[in-house]
Image (cartoon, rainbow, N blue to C red; front, side):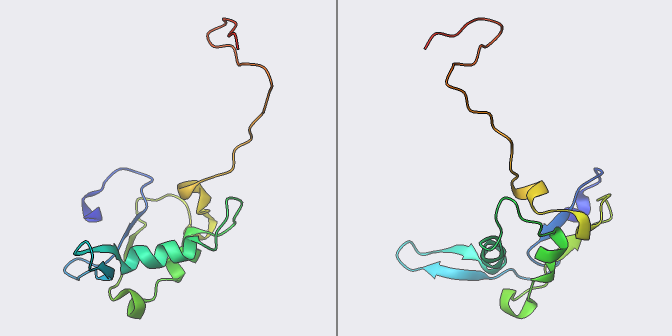
Length: 116
């Protein structure tokens, strides 16, 4: 699917190569459906070790892909992406820490005073 992308600064990762199956990890017999695929399961497993101030990069994530465990060959397209994967933090895509200022007073909206 990502072969159809042409916009700049797009990093694409897919669960399997074109023509290759992407397998489920867990099938819930109670609901009769697969609830997670192997690719997603192992991505989430990696993210469990990442916190909001992590310095893990996209290259770190991609290097964890084990084709034997996943059962497919995840595809990665980087030609539209301007940065090096080794210098692109996961938090650039999946979260970040923002500075928040806590106050005890309501914040005025549109220049008007807001009553509590």
